[in-house]
Image (tube, rainbow, N blue to C red; front, side, top):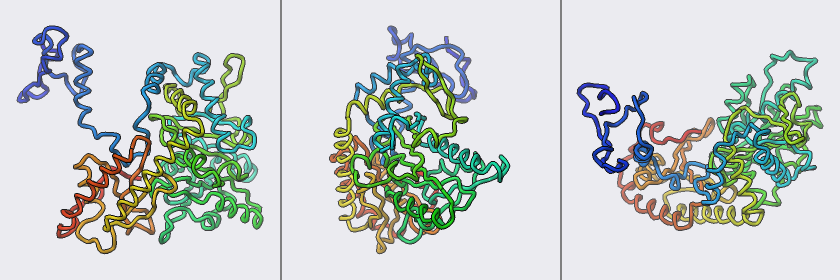
Length: 469
């Protein structure tokens, strides 16, 4: 008996499930394919449902070859087992799952120590679904603190501003749109592809809730000069009395710099840094999605934004936009912190940076490309075609590399550098030296054919790549 009354269109021929998917009798397991856009009339055996979904997902790209994403694509099997064991635990139910809540608290304490909070025990923070939510929370705290400081001057509906570089991740533009904050963006200029400290300070006024510094720009992998930004704001305060806090968006760099760039001062060692976020699911080495938001102390996080839960006689403050979400990723983050420690993280991140730097050199040696960055900050590098290359462009390269399974984003830079189109390679744990060698070989094999083109072939630049900032 078919599981539904037939195809949605009379002229369509129904597909059948492979007989070998049946539980015992191959013929008995045959059925018409279930509808795709409405619930089927009846159930399927679990093995059949699994195989149908599994087969369709085979058409996805290989995540290990996705050089566009910063998100972790490989973890140890033991981490996967722990995550399976915690999928049914709701992270928000801290009374019900006190040990999961305790692991979250420990992760916050570890990050506070890693980021040199003056008193790690006094730092406050929480897990999130990723850096986008963490940035929203940090922005909310900045706006509420500004509103409290200026309650005698402005009504609650006043529209303040937030200063940032034009290279920020789109979540900051969303924050400004959702919470009615004016986004003041420092444009790119020449070979400066991120925020300029002096230009940022010039955009600040009495209505500025804060300045966002990016530790690891998604456009090219470079660190913004956080210490210089704080120094420029110190000078602004000396001149005008304006005390502007800084939030560091360390989505990627906040779990790279502490291990590889220990002399770089960017974190809570700078008194002007009020809050920091990071993505546990990027260079924190955890599957998506987990992020972290931390504040220097309780004073930087207005108490009215915090929801408090009492568990086992203790106080667990929570501050999140999401409510129900699995505890699996938080547990995986704690596992990874415990598993690697400082030396383990240093080894993993150094290996990833070494791969990025060597691959960048291989790309440069091909002769057709010029490097914008070299992978010596984030394990990320961006490159453009050389000035003498006219037969093809970066969009052609991205399209042709996709034919070999490599997902390499090609995109145009924002205002003031819209003339610049680049390719970007993100190296992550799991992207080994061997894979990098294969990438370089595939790229090198494409060049003779690309050089013979009469002109760049890709006309629709928006359709050329699925990557957009």
